[in-house]
Image (cartoon, rainbow, N blue to C red; front, side):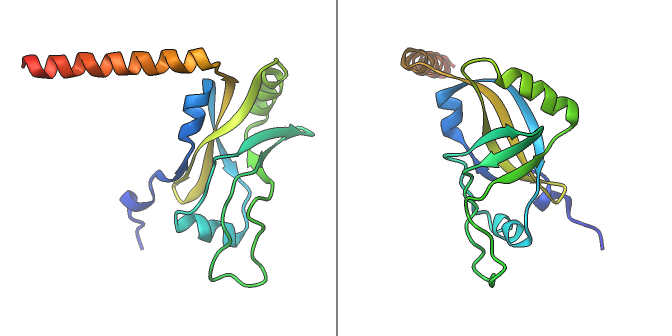
Length: 157
């Protein structure tokens, strides 16, 4: 039986829009996740939250912390803990690069998106630097100026 391409191809489960507002994004990496069966079923229902999530590196492995995947409703005693640590699957060279870059002050790893790609759960993590409040105000001002320019151009047409 052929799999339908449209429904499972990069189906976004959760996004962390707040991260794009609070941080300067330097590098983005795609990582697989080690999950239990009930976690995958819960993700297929489209339920997850990346709000307080972050990634840490321990003993040469990358771990995703504080990402909330709710308990699967139809699960039994084999259900998972909603905020457990989950191991991320990255290439060794990527992990070594992340170890070197996270040692710099002010850098951290934050999840941006959680999605399915070819039937497998993936997370997009980013190496970020924190923004200051004046940086956030500057970004809002430039966005509003771009919107105003676009409105003026539409009125002229």
